[in-house]
Structures are given as structure tokens and as C-alpha cells.
Amino acid sequence: MRTRRGAVVALLTVGLLGVTPAAPVSATPIPGSSARGSSGAPASPAMLLPPEIAAQPATRIVPGSVNRTTMALTATYSVGASLAWGSGRLSGQATITATNDSPAGIDRIELGTVLAPLGGLRLGVTSVDGRTVAPTVSGQTIRVPLGGVLPSGAAATVVVRFSATLRSSTRGSNWLFARANGIAELYRWIPWVSRSTTFARPNHGDPFVTPSSPAVHVVLHADVPLRWATTGTRTALSADGLTATFDAADVRDFIVTASRDATTRQATVNGTTVRVVSRRGFPSAAVLSAGVTALTRLEARLGPYPYPLLTISESAGGYGMEGPMTVWIPPNVAPSNLVYLVTHEIAHQWFYGVVGSDQAREPFADEAMADMATRNVLGMRRASQCSTARLDLAIYRYSSTCYYEDIYIQGGNLIDDARRRMGSPTFWAAIRGYLAAHRFGLVHTRQLLDAIDAASPVDFAARWRTRFPSLY
Ligand SMILES: [Zn+2]
Image (cartoon, rainbow, N blue to C red; front, side, top):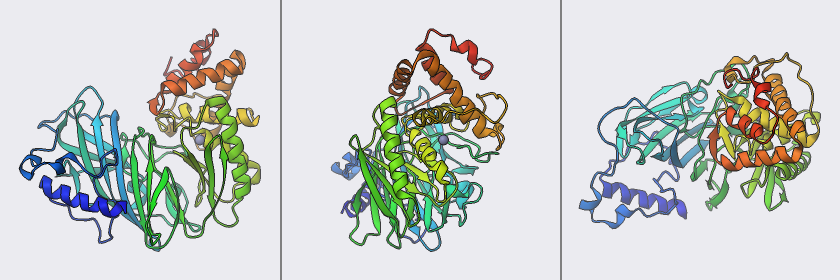
């Protein structure tokens, strides 16, 4: 009954703080749309005070402007969303409480969401500390003006109300936000702290960068019973089965698939549940086997997977894809490619998940390392089919033909050459040190290269200079 209690608390808080509730974006009831603290505690200190005291200014924002934003924010997310299965319409509300960890004040927050380029995003009233603001949308970025300056160390609460409609095919980039083949898939949909990043690219690169969040709370409602497969773990389910609550910690996204008729199959690896969620016809036994082998072998090299659950979900189509605690495998993957694809996406749990990076501007950092680890555990190293390329460019600079061959294959081989020269024990110890040093943070390619270089007497930097001319 968490949802009901949360709603009551929200009404009380709104009344005490003298905040006028904003008009909902649609008539659809939005579950779990109360403002919750990062701890998940339903009561706020303001409720314990008499109204005249609680009505003191509840914002740390001060007048002024600095034309500055940052990704150095510790942000928690409390999201409620309703999905109309038949129409594919999604409506909801995200409450983001963000602390400015940067050394200077900021006057706007940039949120990324594929709802804008793919879902025909419509924003309802957006507020900052209860005051209505006027966001602007460009590409996949919602720029939220804070109405003043949020000083270093201070926190603000941003509420974004949204509606969007799932695409009905998986063509192009549609597969990131679509309902097709009986499955809805929602990638990078929650408006999440990011920085302005171009969505369009000539390849299938991931145009995303998101800082990790210590607490994400998501309530999903649908008008028909659905089997959800998401980041996080399910912490509540309504009696009618239509409303499910999920919580996650230390994740840089919350991604979702849903279908009416999926079934599950699962196993355990070193205390982690590996769960395959799929519809009829999907090779769930082979995928589970590949997932168990991948997790076992990757943990032996990289150290423990940091969550209790890894969900491998059949997606509607498109590419294999990674999200925190979950990976997507499309239907109709060639059997010869299945083990590789499952392993590659699981390797991203460390390189993208544990250590994050700007996947658009520095794809080497996650893709080369994830693919190197994948091919190492599977013994699948091979030569590139494209000519020798720079490895320090953004996804926008690689052709669709050679993006994979350059970044994944050539990049992975460059790292694997280093492993051969220093020996596997030294190499993997260096990688584990890198993962520990930047756990749930964001890095640049150079930090990965430096971690490898520092572990060996070989002067790798001299060898790597021509491949990363912007870094050396
Ligand atoms: Zn990848």
C-alpha cells in the first residue's frame, strides 16, 4: 500500500508548503507521483512543523544567472508513469532532487530523454522547488532553467510532467522507444541529468551520457496486466496486478520492456539471479546459458557484479543493448551470434554501468573495453575488416560501415595487445583497480588508457599516440 500512503503524504506536503499543484498532463491517473526523499521515507521534516514555520522559503536557489550547468549532480529520481497498451501512450511525472556537487553555482539543469526525438514529447507543467519554470526542448535535451542560481552544495527539486507515444516499428532509432512484435521497449526515457548531446548519428552508437543515481523509485501502471522487465527490483505489486513498483540504487538509467505474455527462466551465479524474460519462440534456454557463462567468466576477471539481479529481456527489435542490471536481446538473432551478443551486453554492466563514460563523445571507453572483455572470455579475437583508424573520435565521426570494426574490433585489439604484453594477471588487476577507483562515476578514455599504461613498464602511450591524437 506504499502508493496510497505516498499520495496522502504528497497532499499533506503540498498543503503545508503552500505549493499549488500543477495541472496534470493528462486525465490518466499517475501512480507514485508524490515527491519522495532519496531515502524513500514517506515523511518529510516540514510535515512535523506548524504551517507558519514550514512555509518558510523551501528553496536554496538565489536570484541571478551564471549561464552554467553541470553533470556533477547527485540526483535521485521518483517517477510515476502510465502506459496505455493499445495506443502506446505513456504519461507520467519525474521528481528529480539534485544536489550541486560542482564547485560553482548553476542556473539550469540539462535532462536527456528519447521521449523528445522519438515519442513526440509533450511537457506538462515543469517546476523547480514548487515554482513553475519554462523549459526548452532541443533534440533529446530538456533545458530546465532553475529560476536563479543553485549554489555549490545546495539541492533543488525539479518536477517534469510528460507524455509521449511509443513508435510502432523498430526502424532506425525507433527501437529505443517502441511497441512492436508484442513488446514495448523504453530506453533512456526518464528525463535524466545529462548534457546536451546530439541524438542523430550515422551509426548505431549510443548518443548518451548519464551520471549514476543513488536512488531511483519507479511506479509503472498499465491498463492491462503486463510482465515488466526493468532495471532495479520489483518492490510492490498492486492487488489488481496493474501497478508495479521498482527500486534501484547506483544506476545510471532505468530501462523497461513489457509484454502481455512473457515468461521467465532463471538461474543463480555467485548469489546473483540471472533472469531471462521472453515470449514464445525466443531461445530463452540458450540465452540463459550464455548469460550464466558470461557472468561467471566476467566476474572472475572483473570482480563481483554489483547487483542482486541481472535481467536479460527479449526486446522488440533493433540491436542488443545494455542498461543497468538489464540487457536487451532482440528476437531473431542468428544462433551463431547469440552467445557473443549476450556476453557483450553483460560486459557493459562494468564498462558503462560500474564505470560510466560519455558514450557519444568517447565510445572507445565503454565499447572497446566491453568488446575486449567479451572476446577474451569467449576466445573470439579477430582482425578488423576496416583500415586502421583513429579511436578517439565521437560516434558522429564514424561511418555505419566501419564504426563497429574501428571502435569495437580495433579498439578491443589495442587493449588486448596490452594484455598480452603485460600478462593477464597484471592486466586484469589493473582493470579491477580502474573499476574500483571510478565505481559509479564517469571517466574519459584517457583514464582507462592511463590505468593500463601505469600497470606496465612498457611505454604504451608512445604506441597509442597515433590512435588517440587528441589525447596524447
Ligand atoms: Zn556495446
